Picture 1 (spheres, helix red, strand yellow):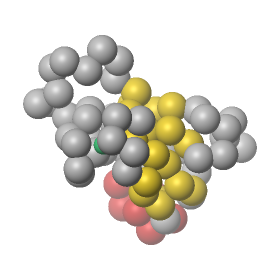
Picture 2 (cartoon, protein in one colour):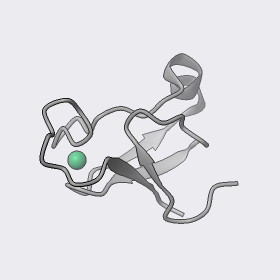
Picture 3 (cartoon, helix red, strand yellow):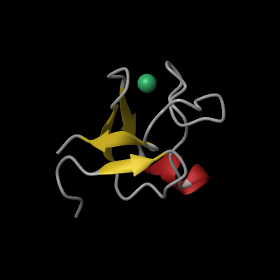
Picture 4 (cartoon, helix red, strand yellow):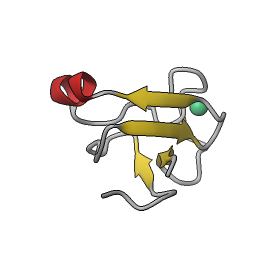
Length: 68
Ligand SMILES: [Zn+2]
């Protein structure tokens, strides 16, 4: 069980199959079990690149919000 509005870093383990929102640009992604099986962790945002190595200005490194 994941608490609503929990936030995760791009490098963290994905806790559950569900929807997550990039807290920087608002992109909503839906993580499926097959993705977790393959990769197991989050990733940097494909739209705004929050959480990747080109994101030096981001004051905190939690990027993905669980849409509870
Ligand atoms: Zn984003």
